[in-house]
Length: 113
Length: 113
Image (cartoon, rainbow over all chains, first blue to last red):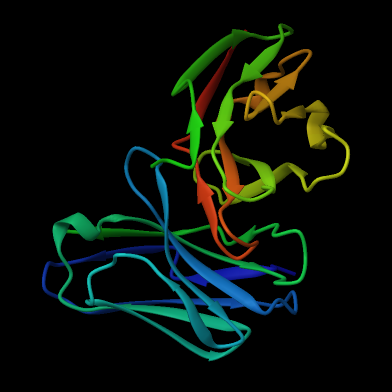
């Protein structure tokens, strides 16, 4: 059973399109995250939700909009895709009252042409 | 100001020799510190964590790390490298609470036969 699952795993699209990446966790965690990993492997937090409420919103273009329908899901919608959005996007979850260990999905590789 | 610095972007060792991956941090609070490993095309997996208990922390696959407050360091070591250890390693620090975690730039470990 996959603890944190993301779909799709690969996404190739044209500039200007809108796309979504979905994330689900079955660990019972109340906090979920989106991270962006660039081509140099640098990981940067984008958003964090706790019990469906946004708690971290880093400097991310407003073309990126997270949505958390419930605490087990955190989706990422991206409008008007740009070349620089090409990256691997990782979803993660954690228990807010715990030691902070993050559980990661396997990543979604987005390629914008 | 950067919260966590991994001092080497790339470390190369021979199989059977010791591994040292260096990490320095800065935090206004008593930090929690983590090391994660990322194998190619995979998500990140927790290796070990420090959360104000014993300063020498043992993790999976024979890795360990020592928290040194006076040096603000949390270096990762392993006595004998294995080919399967080749991966990207990330040092992570919590900033203000366990929901806000920042990643180092990563160290790529290469293991030569």
